[in-house]
Length: 600
Ligand code: NDP
Image 1 (cartoon, helix red, strand yellow):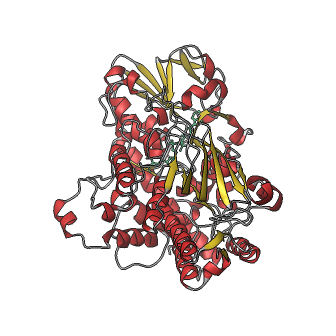
Image 2: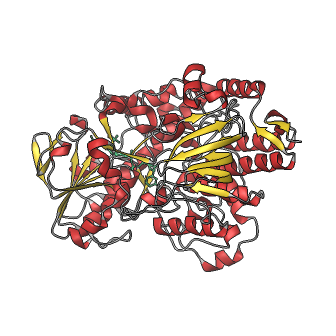
Image 3: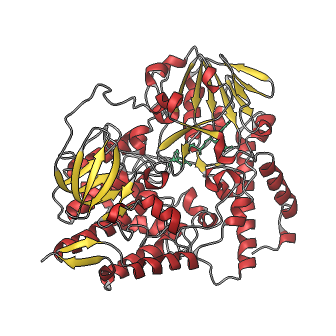
């Protein structure tokens, strides 16, 4: 490791610059600054793709398993339960089809920035190899639908339907699932997979409701107004002045298309994203032919190990995620480098971080021709303070004559919106259309948000129980008092940037538990109090202390807008160790801790 005095930059000066950039962005209202898509803003949440006139009779029947949510988590739960022998599976989904994130987000330029060969699940089961290293949204959405067809999940599923309550019936030992279409479905097992970034949010900009032009959120792209499709060709914008608010991972993909097609584009930036090289390329058919059974599992495992610091002889994915692996430790902690003394390790991380960010700042200077614009586009924070992004066209778009970057850091975001303009620093930018690329409410869906009430044994509320007793689960999936209920997600377990891989491990685990319960004719799957307490203790003992790192970051949804939570609820040894723990648990008698009473 280089000594601080041998570095070609001034460590202290950079630290001070980062602090200053953070301080000028912190807002006292924190996460209270946003508007939720309800009430007068409810129209932003409507489904532009589904039939608004759709009606059907309420379902009053019984299935073996209900899965709440038809994104990749729900699809994987359905697929793995099907493989485990469960016949009657009903996925209940708010959207008009399967796909989750990829159903809602269809903005121009949409791609997944995690390599397609490891991101798209069940490729070998479906005999499919994606067409590009980084897949476009449409291909991913089609793959989601193909999974549903392959595993027969369309037969009993229902769409445009929201689950409004889950209630355990002690007498019948089954769940009653209520929905906003009047359904009362009974199910032995319920799996909840409602996603984390599924509820779009708007900025609380004064005057936002007074704008007379056209507006929409990127997760409900209005092609009727813009023309074109996810590949571009936004012919409806050729005579329009467009404001794009936000410069996160979504905006990075949208801006090149707005720049290509709109008459005038103003990009309103509060914090610049780090923008690394993309390097997308079509799949080599010879490579695809050379793949041997088990290839996807090996590739996914290899990626997970590389990005979490587990020594590997080769890096199969070999991209900007894997080359920056060490820096990701600050988002997803692992036990890598645990043998290095803390102070030494932290300094090494910090130096590697500065070097990476210097490289990305140099990239901005090299690509962007106007020095003033380039200066504004430079990210001054540590790599994992904000989600890294990748593009070979975003920065270049600011060299186009009709594209202007408006920096809003000093005013903590856009100052106000009038009937016909977006205002920053007293300047009115007159526009015809405002596109909000302002992200999602983290944790505003599912059980933790209170939007999905769950009542278990004796009518006890799951959220209420957690509010009074603290979050208590076994592995994050099951909770005492809530039999045969499985929660997919990222609490009290371990995540990764390739989140679909994580969901697959979770769905596989849940399906294996259910298969064992069916085999043993167990009455319930429910953790013992001892097993649950022991897991909570493990989570506490292993929790990584990310507080200091996050408190020093520029505000954003990664650090609760500058007020990070003091305690982490994730498994501190990381996802590789967690998956190994689950496998061992299953093969070494763990089922004892969750299977109660044979039916006999
Ligand atoms: P983000 O939350 O990342 O970005 C929201 C943007 O809106 C930020 O730039 C934010 O600025 C800005 N903003 C918020 N309020 C204001 C305001 N009042 N004035 C001006 N600007 C404002 O949302 P995204 O939709 O970009 O991304 C969300 C997540 O979705 C990503 O982090 C990623 O996890 C996922 N994603 C994944 C992709 C993939 O390829 N896998 C692609 C796209 C998204 P500030 O940063 O200062 O808060």
